[in-house]
Image (cartoon, rainbow, N blue to C red; front, side, top):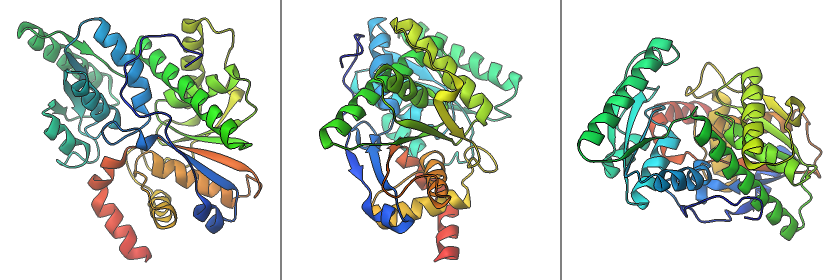
Length: 342
């Protein structure tokens, strides 16, 4: 796109649809809700990471890698999209994962089985320094083993400064795409609601809105990090990307509003409100959210609407960041909720 002149591979179908959700709006009593359907971008199960990977894997290819390695959780949406993208580009993939809440061979792990991903799952407290060091050691061991076998592995992990920047840039591009759609459809949108985990998507969209001088207010709904940490991630990653690209703009704390009230007991544990949101969206608009990220962020949006945060005539854009396959690993929680509340 016009803003960005970096190497990029083609992995998804863009632009993704911008879909109005009139039934959901009617049930909630307004505002007009629109979904930016990045779950429909055509790679794997879809999702926001496809935009990141178009830049990240262009960089990996440039270095001649034929095997990508990553970490994160056993049901990570990023990992399965990384594996899917790697195969699309003629590479293979391997991962060292923390066990997570749902390590059963279902959801994203089942898709990894189809792709023949090389996976090692480690048990332990993933927040401890010792555990993180164990993951790093196992990743390096896997990389060394592949190198001895004649491969050229590349490690792609969250927290790598260069890949984080490329991920943010992917969503600056996505923001430009969205603003063009709004202009074409003559939609005057007041709010943009974004699920938050690593904050790369939120950072990219916040930076994109400032670069393109949009007056839309951006709201991040965290499914993982507390507000202060999410704000710090947003500001750091957005400004690192702006510096890398030579853009004369700075993101500050007040450029986005972040809510952390909807995380629940902890990351990867579905809340009652999350399950309600999944069912409500499915029953009104016919598509599905996941219990980790989009379900919680939609629960936050629904709560904000019920608290009259938005006027009935206003337009709110919700970014559907995908993650659909993981819904099947939460079958018991979903069954229990539906049988209790119907």
